Length: 307
Image (cartoon, rainbow, N blue to C red; front, side, top):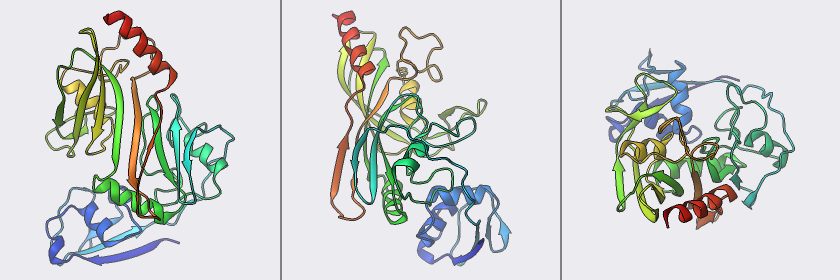
């Protein structure tokens, strides 16, 4: 059943973004879910519909939020093998392979990680809607590595809050073009590309985004192996940030050259480490996923090239 929810903005919330205000007022709604409700025209401030997530609220504002009734999902559970890193009653961590989409979207309604999770798990959290049960965060189809999904709403809310507070540890490994001489930080806002809406870009009014990168190995002067730790988690963040400083990811035909010297089947990027406070125990836990075979083989090939 559709729900109408009403909140009043307190003085300590004056001036914050509308999506954050909703998430702060309602523990059942994550910030990403609030963003979607706003864009769908289901949120009003003092009885006036607002569709911009960046709208600032004022003390005393009345927020009205319409939460649609859950739709019956047509997603099918599929017996797809999963490389399970860890699993308990609250969370499951998967080492995602290349070419696997995380959740269903246009053109990809089968063969996704969600389809596999529906077969493997009896329950998944429902906070992110019928097409993304259990999914707290995602990585691109061509990116490999460790990913967490939640089996209940309590765990999902806990991890979503940690994501919003940027307290989850996420370390990625990548090979980039060029000779990255030293460690560094890219602090540049990311938003939709002003012309190509399928791409992201560094834009003035984009969302705050910070990537810390560390040099692990040089392969001559043509390529560099990096570890990148995310302070924030924007769409295509590492790919956009590294390209912006002249070091696009090897294999990335979207933010780098369309002609690539190696058949990597997309960007050479691996989510290696994921750490967070466990939603039940309250203790910090950390998980890792080994580099996939193609990544290791490429490193060996580049070592010979650079020697």
